[in-house]
Image (cartoon, rainbow, N blue to C red):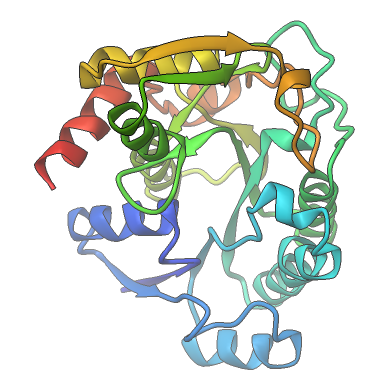
Length: 286
């Protein structure tokens, strides 16, 4: 029985993989979070990996607090870059397949068309810089690994835009939401399914892949969709990024092109609205 190690198991994607695990009883699943596998402890990381001895590693762990990363540069680099290098090295030496999750924030946001995997990265914040460094280390130290870039992740687990907006729309009479950052949301459950489509495929084609839900929207339009589905009575206005300054700059346009993952692995990419509906239905039933 092949063993799958999932790091960052308490995050949004890790939690969705835990939900999916029962659909894949042919695998032995090992879910680790900071307590079981501390990626910031580079000295002991290899020892713990050797003890677990997986055939697949799905690396969902990262420092994803984008604004906090601006001041926590060393920690961000440790988790998003150095730890990834150790994972890549270990998987390469131990014939283990590595799927590493990355981000649309490796791009600067000045594109005007959906970004393919060959588009030139040029991050504009610390989070993006450390994630790109992680990607490079990953492919350099284990050329057989797969990197999946994703964007705007949400889920019924953890903290995210959908849950925050749903709460605020019930608490406030009006909200302002940025309307000049364009991309597409990703329901973590759909990303988890895409990852398992790759894991269970007979072919393994290393390299970078993009995955997010279908649709090209702004955060403002995303908020309007949340309002519509949740039937929330709240006035929502679109504002420019300049009116809502944050410690970290965000890419203005980071829509991901999903053609490659569809062609190579036959991954089905759901439309963002159907997935949002499914997630909000889950949230209502909780």
